[in-house]
Image (tube, rainbow, N blue to C red):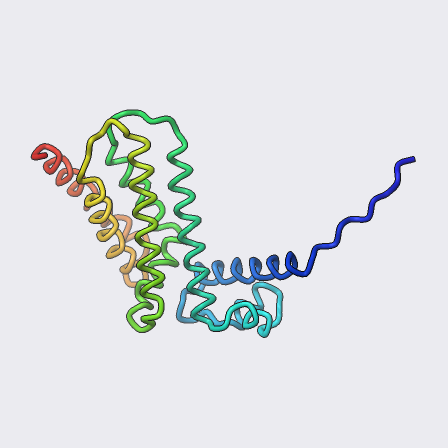
Length: 206
């Protein structure tokens, strides 16, 4: 008869890491559901099922916690972009597909949570540096994914196209709490062909 083995107990470091991850997951969910302004360390603690003092033990301030949670949201969006790039390269860049993929992420719950933080940065300058780094990483990932999918497309204007597209999408996302997602989505459908036409004109001149 085989001897039963006693399950290994997690180390203190593993328990700390698990608690920290649970707190961050709770903060990310809170950002998506409630937005930046109303999310408190107490609310995060309740979501995570830990004491508020535990949250503050792992993160010295609310801003530190939410900045890291925001970074993780961005990382997950980047991972989605890079997952798309695992497909086989297929030749010329399909800018319509690129636009549609970007918009789907900008209007996703995670994208809208980050949009909430763009507004918050006006009155919380400590967020600005984190947001700037996040935007640069997202843009790098999008450009890298597009270049992987279309390696034969010599397109020196790709980054400018991605930057301009994201700037337009950020502006639309900021309108969501004012006019609603359906209205913003309808506006995007009107703007989309204009952006594609402008991109085609630039390509023809290049």
